[in-house]
Image (cartoon, rainbow, N blue to C red; front, side, top):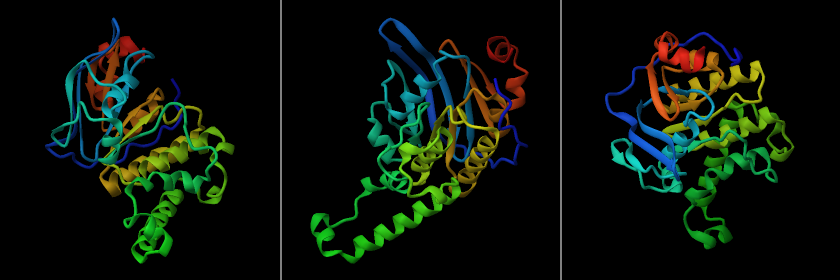
Length: 269
């Protein structure tokens, strides 16, 4: 477990009484294998929540349930109080749940800027093909607004200098920032980050931590992150949930988790 990315803990905004995300008794099975068993957790608006545990603990599987990649065998997932357990991944993404993956997946043939812009295109511009053909003023205005937002995100993620570079030519750290930019450009309600510091250096992890705190404070975006860099999690998370063998074995502030005997035995050593 790396110590990279450790920074001073910043002051946290208070969460709301109503959680943005509520995971209630979720169980996920793959055939006869129980990957997640009766897991519950919640994430208030504006909170950064860590999800840690040993390899194979079920963290990514739980992520996949929250984002709609898999459907739990039991339990409920709620977004702003509404049951979204059976909603598809696309529906959830368009209502404010965005994520990155352990293995970066940019559109390699597109430029950095177009990768980020692509995350806004589903919204459409109104008027259909006819509006494109006649350069309808409303369509031009929407396009201008989108490109301005892309410029803001490129600046935040430190990508302005390579905006025209094909994403497939980038090293891992830059490719991860492209995926992060693509995930946050639409100002999501909930951002899920799966191993975001994997393969990046200390300075890049510090930049990532600053971006997380920026979008949390500016956009009131909640963040749920799976991460093996315990120092990064302790520095940037308000609360931490710990999974082992598919079950929640601990939850609390960084200090409470660090001092939890069950967590130390299973993961922190």
